[in-house]
Image (cartoon, rainbow, N blue to C red; front, side):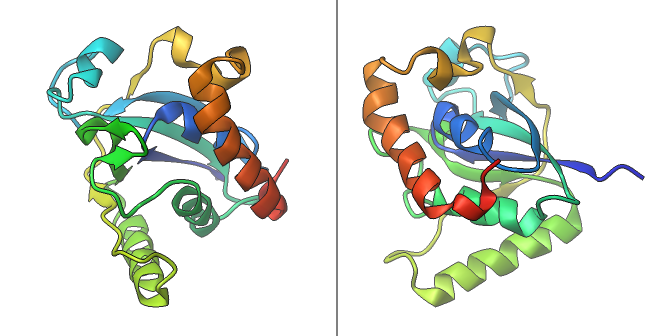
Length: 178
């Protein structure tokens, strides 16, 4: 039986989330994309309107013998702000919602327990607003979104938004690094 699993998560802009998870030991692949909406095969331009219902997400394939589902959640919640509704920083709209897409009842229970744990710990000054949504069709983003940070490190968004998030993770998440 394969130990390869996947999770579809939205932590705001998929460029940030992809960049972080590509550094995680046990992660096999990370694909930016869209899910959770009604439009069939949406484009980035359509997603950006906020009218399709989709979230910018990444599909993270990982080896559960190397990294646990709970550790994936720990990384996810610690690398974005799960307390802001439909936004991450200056990225505003439902497409930037903090979200996890799954139909696996065991995963839903683990996610809910971890959210309760975080809310009880007062690690965040506000309650988490992360949604757990039914897994839907995952549409892979256009090619120019793949490896965006690696290919565009000097772009203002990369240097001002992604790089600081990545540096914080590299410092605080050393136990998870490849």
